[in-house]
Length: 118
Image: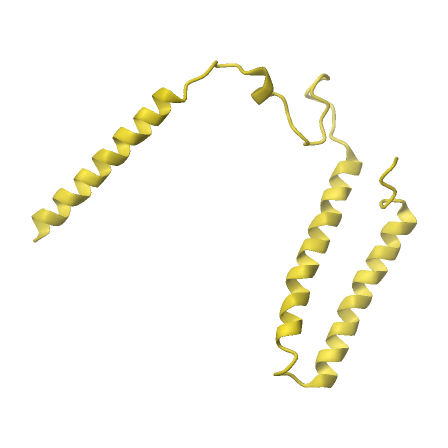
């Protein structure tokens, strides 16, 4: 019984290693590919020095996206638990949460972060 488990495990490992080696050999391309080496949508200018700092505007836009992404992840369960919770506590929590988001949106608007044309 134990011998068969060890045998099957070793065959699976051998097949996996052979497939990985074949994939590695067959996928070899040029060592330095200009398209693969250049950054894509990362905030850096690919033609300039790599020591320049990245765009702070790009970083802040990323943070805004993450905030609204997490916001959706927090609002969806609130909708699902509506039937099972106290309506007053649910309403109070929802209103406070949405007010915090609206204050943040107003602050971003005043700072000019939502002006995409600049």
